Image 1 (cartoon, one colour):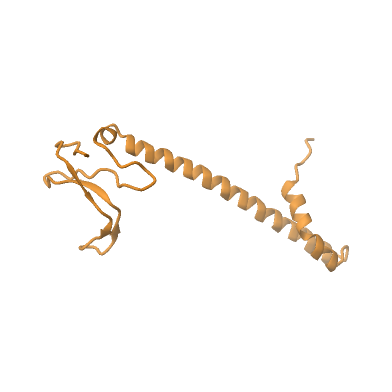
Image 2 (tube, one colour):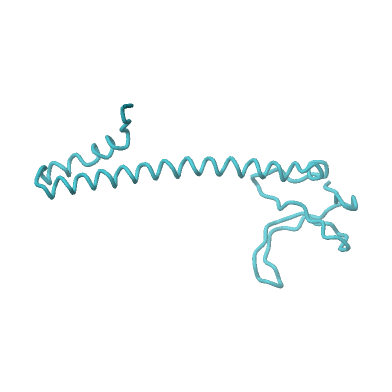
Length: 130
C-alpha cells in the first residue's frame, strides 16, 4: 500500500479520466484522502513502476522518469540524425544530377537507373584527410 509522504495516510489511486471542471483529460495518479494538503505523487505510467512510499520519498520515481526521458531523447536524436543524413544525401545527389542533366553530360535514362547508387555513394562518402 502506498502512503502519503506528508501525513503517512494510505493513498488512493485515481484512474485516468476527464476533468469535470475543465473538460481536459488527465493521467491516473495517487492522491491523499486528506484534503488539507495537496500531496499528489508522480503520475503513473505503464513504462514506470507504480510509486511506493519509500521509492517516492527518496525521489526514486522521479529519478527513474528523468533517466528514461534522457534515454528516449538520446534514442530519438540518433534516429533524427540518421534521417537527416539520408535526406541530405538524396538532396545533394539530386542537385548534382540536375546540374549534369542541364549540361547534357549524362543521359536521363542512365540517371533513372543509377540514382540510388549516387545517393548511397554520397551517404557513405568519407572524405580523405589532407
